[in-house]
Length: 231
Image (cartoon, rainbow, N blue to C red; front, side, top):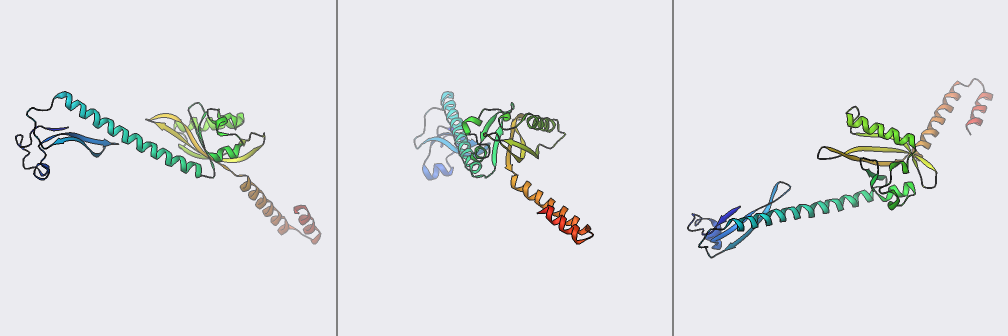
């Protein structure tokens, strides 16, 4: 906080603000945002004061400086969150976040499309809503290992996701831990439907097996049989 009741009397007469603008009286402080100087808040006058600023006046400026800095930080955080929300909604894969109890705190539109559940149904529901018991236990085991440090804090694994209509599909979950001031705050991840990939892999494996069989065939009759079985 900088308090100048009379710039000329207090040795600020050669300061550019006094020489250029004629500022004789000044009370102000730095506005900081995320630890960095954002600007200043000040009260200034060309007329000098006969008495010094009081402690109450200084406290008022400090209060205003702190409040403005906090409001700017909050506005920037809200803008960042809104931007991240737009990005998450634009992702084709399902995006989710779970709290420490395994309940959904965030899902994007792709996640609702994949599971067939609407957003309102998923939010605050347990992850078992879209996973069977074995899959839930496996995911919890992975999280416990991450917290112990025996597995990396970010990992991709395969699982089965249950849809609202009772069907299921193979998926990959790219999961990471969430932290809040060094405290475990839950998990977040990206769910990708790998049905098409599985089908391609199975078709390729079948083709490879057929090719090996053909290469080992000893007669035209055997070749014909292998081709008939593969068709």
